[in-house]
Length: 144
Ligand code: CO
Image (cartoon, rainbow, N blue to C red; front, top):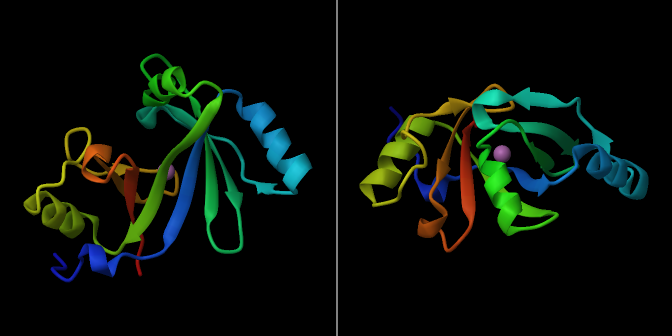
């Protein structure tokens, strides 16, 4: 375990995630109005979402559409009609060390506290937004 992983050792902003109510329409808007280059669609049943990534020079935008019953994104759309900003994703070099350190400081991890494999094939965890002033933060393990 890498004990040097602390919030002060955060890596890059990996992506900003936006929930949309219609992924096809959202992709059309980003592509035709903003000239964005879009990834292939990824279906992620474990996360209850279908995602498309938009590459920018300094980070990515993640477009999220609900998938299946009980998608966490469906609940978000009920509160934010039409969609909106859902989370930011920050890179860490060792997700287990980051999780252990954050929980030792009193932060809460969503779900069962274990990392799941995210859209880029890397382990991810989500921090409770109540501990971060209303913002949902995803941490993704990326070799720094
Ligand atoms: Co994300």
